[in-house]
Image (cartoon, rainbow, N blue to C red; front, side, top):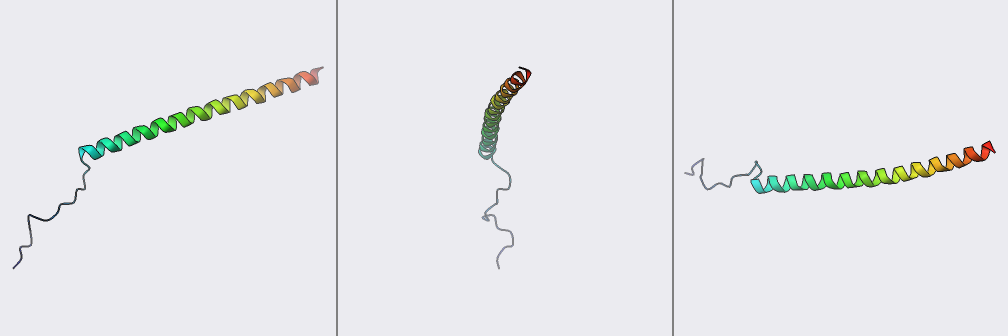
Length: 66
C-alpha cells in the first residue's frame, strides 16, 4: 500500500522568493526609468517642433502685414 501523503513530494513555489521579488521590483524600476526618458525625449522633440511652427507662423503674419 502506498501512503496518500508523502513527504518527499515536490512543492510548487507559488509565492515569489525574496530574490524574485527584488528582481521584479528592479525590472519595474528600470521600465519606469526608460519610459520617463522616452517621455522626456518626446517632449523635447514636440517642444522644438512647436517652436519651429510658431516661428513660421510669426514670419507668415509679418509678411502679410507688410
